[in-house]
Image (tube, rainbow, N blue to C red):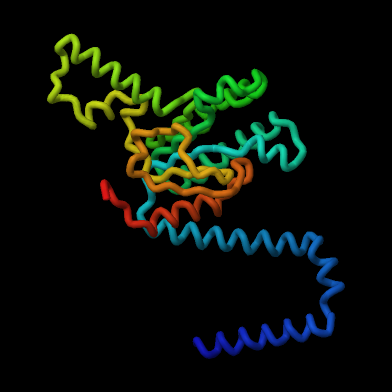
Length: 254
């Protein structure tokens, strides 16, 4: 079987080289490259590849909680000479798609970072309204085993400060002794205390930092960075992130 494949591969290579050498396909290639036939072929190949990706990741251990820093709406719009509001509109539609993909995989927790507290002062009012217009309740109403969280006007440092203030207040009144203050106590006072810490954090648009996102919770999360702007985020990129997560050996404290 192996020899047969190698022979077939060499034969195809030789035929391709001959066609190119004598320019037999140079003109047709220019015509085909812009045709619906080429796009249909590429699209079909992509669907097959994504289907195989899904099969691979489904056979492994899936993360229970995926968090995404949705970055790149404005850069996406700029690259296409569109207004900022159009970038956010495409970003919102992409979020709906990603929710469907996550639900399809059976991942129970999805958290997305839409806007930090630091960005509030640097965004125009119209842009903020576009960001806040995210209603996913109807989309997830039929899924009792799925928790979707959107972080808007959120800051990880502020969250930790609020938790510490609560602990300090309880300690001052005598409700909490010094020996009772530990990592579990702090975790229990965070905004998302009812859900597990993220297993996988994905950030789009090429930035390789966490930008004040879930600073306490992602201490042992696996991080995945992609150059793709959020509105261009694809199912293939999601599967690639999960596949990379599955290949890594998670370490806690080491």
